[in-house]
Image (cartoon, rainbow, N blue to C red; front, side, top):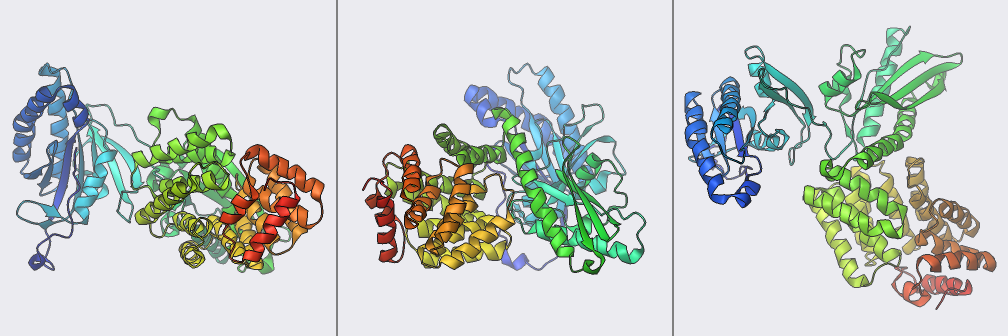
Length: 597
């Protein structure tokens, strides 16, 4: 289907403020129409014209519907009620099944249908409104030959029709801020539709009410408060979709099957827990369940004193959050790595690209770029994919792989700008953009402004705090850099690729003249990431500052092994240190370690 997205903002101003009519909005399109046209243009066109005139047109009239417009390979329709719209859709799929079996056409033509009941703004030859957009955005969730309806339609037809039903949960629709609950339906005589995964570009999680065996009502308020605080902490992590605590606390029976609850809430992960009195205070036991495999992927216990009953709520919530996040990341990555290429979506391509990029292996580097590109091709509005592509260029330059640094500078900035364009408040996009401004262009004020926006949007974003630390090194604020790097590491202590945050500490302590601390973190980072030259450079300079030249030369040899073209003058001439004397001293120490001039 070429374009089913209705235009907004062009409605007649004179009509605004009047009572808007309600209607069931229906979108239809032909599955794989472009491919069918490439294979047999004339035959496909004749076939579609026949279906339009002999099946769809009479079906719309027969159910009292109205054809708003044709979209070439589809239709935009309205019906007075959701019941009429669903009866039409079920009849269409039955008719088209029979039509395909009897017309002898060698290319089966299938349609998909989406429906939403909502207010509309009517014009002479079109309709507008948020509900129309929702109906259009539901269409990709319909299978070939399938039907997807919103919860507003489902509520109208539930007492009347008998049909197969799959609850898709609360879907994230493109450019629709709120999540929309949807269902797949099919006639009872047809096979029941398959349920796709409910997640999109984010792992999704719900925190269920804590079990409180033997607790009095006042104590149960404490258990409820912990749930609210855990949800608030999780919600500040933009990479997750978190169901509001008001929804989860309303679940009447948390002993239901985990799959049923996950379907009800539209999530992949469930966090469950139990709070009970211990000998010296309280004990909270938490479990993270992957509902796909029905397995517990993480569990931990937290104990505290009676006197800390309410003051410790937020601390417990944060401990739970930071403990479970790495397990979610690992599980999501393992799931993506197991998928065959033909079944992967943008999110899976992104995860695999990140995994390859952060391994810092030569053979993985170009592959990671191709995976990010595939993620963008699958979803051209995916801000995280653009941000990771920009980060790829940062490493391309910073790790000495670039053959045209100026061109790569511009590409990094272009992708980072696209990330912000598609998601202006995304902390990763803002942080990568800020780092590019300082690291590649020495635009320190612009960088700090971007980091401040990222932290304001997500105060618990480790990447925002961590990526901002080098900028504070460049401007000579060593202590500020240390504070930021330490906070980043505390926010993500079990991060699979935490060597990056440790590297920022290597750099920060060097620029704070705390060379022993810099060596400590540099050695720790090098043990985890022996190929990361961004860590080796401040480590070498700190060892030289301490007079430990033999060790500095040893690390220098490892640097040259990874970056054979490294030259001190070339590197220092581009390194964005604001004060020239800092740049000169860095050059002197790198040369003292025997690195080529």
